[in-house]
Length: 79
Image (spheres, rainbow, N blue to C red):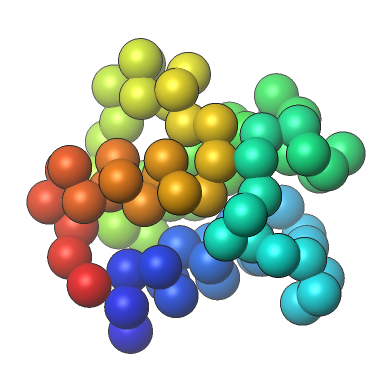
């Protein structure tokens, strides 16, 4: 499964999103579910799924699905 597909599944599961949410264009605080508490749950779920650990700056900078994809690739996660 491609990195973006795996990440999309994590976003949907972690934030409790419906299938009609455009996850690929989602940005922090665009929806009520992605608040500060949801953000920390999402980060933990991504770390678990991809077996990575984000630095504090990366957690703060993770402002969109696209940024999360780039960060994961930077940590060596592959498609």
